[in-house]
Image 1 (cartoon, rainbow, N blue to C red):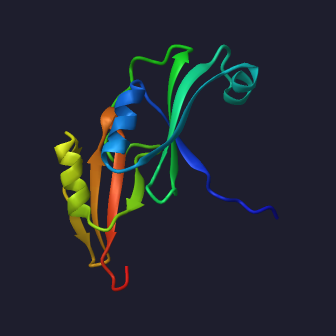
Image 2 (tube, rainbow, N blue to C red):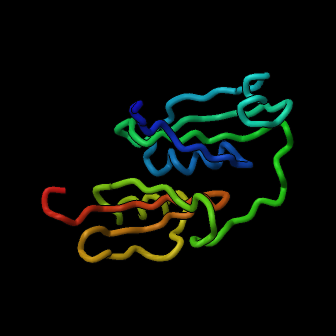
Amino acid sequence: MEAITFDHVGFIVHDLDAAVKFFLDLGFVRQGSAEVSGRWMDRIIGLDGAHAKMVMVSAPDGSGQLEISQFIEPAPAANHQVHPSNAHGLRHIAYQVKDVDAVVAKAAAAGYGLVGEVVNYEDVFRLGYIRGPEGLILEVAQPLWEGA
């Protein structure tokens, strides 16, 4: 069987600059950007005349790449909603951090808040959900076990 390796997660947003700023404000690193269109794109996503801008970001260690895209054509739906944490579909992405409180403070200084509160999960992790633009949720997880 062929090896399967994680590559990236993609997000579609209305405001590319605001979404990218959210991740950069929290310490992510911009990896590159592109504007894409063409028949190959139409064929893979099943939409005719597709044209999008995208930016790749990753955690500072280069892991966990995120592809953040904004469609220019076809015009995106205007009725996007911010969903609660239990709505179906991709709700959040999670990254381990050394200090949850420091990341939450950095997020607050940049104007972002928590979905709920920072909690201690059974002395295994300190966890918090940070709400970004357009309903994006970044979970930050600080391991509490020895040697973490």
